[in-house]
Image (cartoon, rainbow, N blue to C red; front, side, top):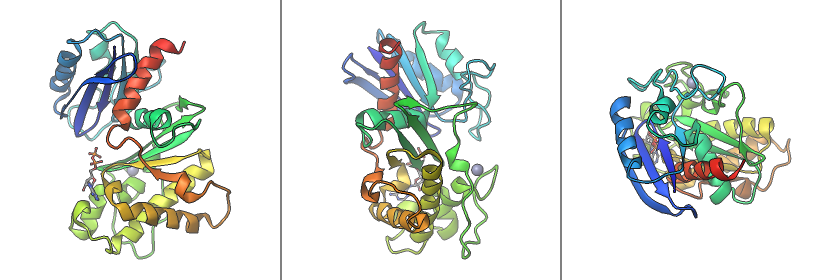
Length: 287
Ligand code: ADP
Ligand code: ZN
C-alpha cells in the first residue's frame, strides 16, 4: 500500500492506494495550524500499512537534501507554516521511504503518467488559482535545480491599458500578481466564477497567461502544457489563451498544433494526489 499527500494552502488531501494505485481511501480537510493539520495526516495514515509516502506540498519548500532546510516549508504568507519541518514531522512517526516535492511538481508528474500528457516524456503543469504555480517534468523525471522552479513569479509585459498594481506580496506585478484568481476580483470587484464570458477582463487574463506559456516554451520546449486550477474552469478561457499564444509567438518557434499543445488537465482536481501516489510507488520500484 502507498500513501499520498497533496498539501495545499487551502486544503490537504490524503489518500492510500493499493499496488495497482487504485485508491482505497481518500480524505480532505482544511489547512490549519501545521501541528494540528499534520496530526490529522498522521492519524489517517496510521490506519494503513503503507510502504512509502509521496508528498506534494505548497511552497516554497526546501528540496535540496544537502541543505538544513530540506523538508521544510520556507517563506510562505500562510500563517504559522514558515520554517515548519513538514517532512521531519512525518519521518519521526513513519520509518518508510518518502518523496518530497511541490504540489505542482506532483501534479505535473500525475498528468504525465496518467493524465493529459500521458505517453510524453516532458510536460509543464500550470495552475491558475489563488496563486499561480508550475511544475516541470523532463525525461519522465521531476525537474529541479538549486530549488524548485517558481514559474508563477516571472515577469510578463504589462498591457498598456492595465493600471492595476498587482497582488503579489513580493513583486506586485509578476504573473501571479497580475493574473491569479484574486486579481480578477481586485480589478472588477466580481469574483472570477461570476464574471461573464464576454467581460473584457478575459482578454487581458488570456494574454498574460499566454505570455507566460510563450516564455516557458522558449525556455524549456516541453512536449505539452497542461493547465489546471479554479480559474481554468472558464471553458472559453482556454480558447482565448491558445489564440493569444499564437499571436505572441508570431510564428517564431515550431510547436505542435496549439489545440494539442496547450490543454486542460486530464485529472481534474486529482493530478496532485495521483502524482503523489505514483511518486510513492516509484520510490520502491524505481531504484
Ligand atoms: P486554490 O488555488 O486555493 O487551490 P482554486 O484552484 O480553486 O483553489 O482557485 C481559487 C481561485 O480561483 C479563486 O480566486 C477563485 O475566485 C477562482 N475561481 C474558482 N472557480 C472559478 C471559475 N469557475 N472561474 C473563474 N475563477 C474561478
Ligand atoms: Zn511574485
